[in-house]
Length: 253
Image 1 (cartoon, rainbow, N blue to C red):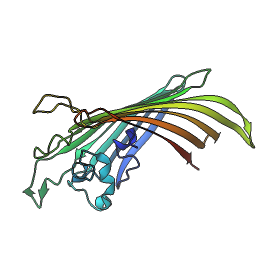
Image 2 (image 1 turned 60 degrees about the horizontal axis):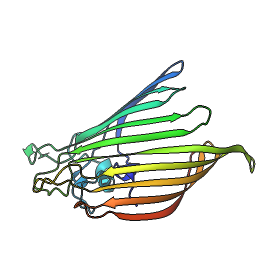
Image 3 (image 1 turned 60 degrees about the vertical axis):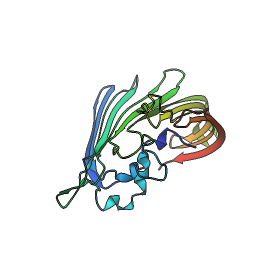
Image 4 (image 1 turned 135 degrees about the vertical axis):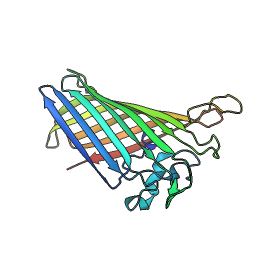
């Protein structure tokens, strides 16, 4: 099943360097992150998915050795948080992805990929409902020789709501918590209209994911999900409906 995290290359690592920091002032926190790193390559528009697909760049094993375009990818984020209200973040990632020159010889135009995102999280007072969400917009300079099957604009996001039901000592864990949760996701892989007909390009997908979770400690969570998903093809045919269960464990030390 496809979810919002597949629109962006989650867990994508690259060689690079950067700066980050946080400043605290009473209930407020201000943070920043700035990085220069390896970038995308042509696989984001030339891949087995037969569409514009940024995560395809994770299959490029040479990204740790050289940058396809010769130019680094810039990534930046600004965040502000009030401990009594919420945290808000604004992010940007962008750079040239194609090999536009070789030994000074011009091969192609510089083709960019740019990603803008906004994220939010908050815990409601008294009832302790945790809400987190993110929305991202992607813009890609796709070669004119490609069909409109390869979108030059994408957007999508999610909102996740977790409500604690029970918090007590369980099996030796002092502050174990049982939660109910619900997550909504949406991705439009190809924003725009067909140039030939003026009709909408309908390659989108949405899902709703109710869940129950158990958190024995603050560092570990076990979660059982049921995903109902509806997906429409590029021509706007009646959507396909799918559903299924998944179980996950997340922890850190």
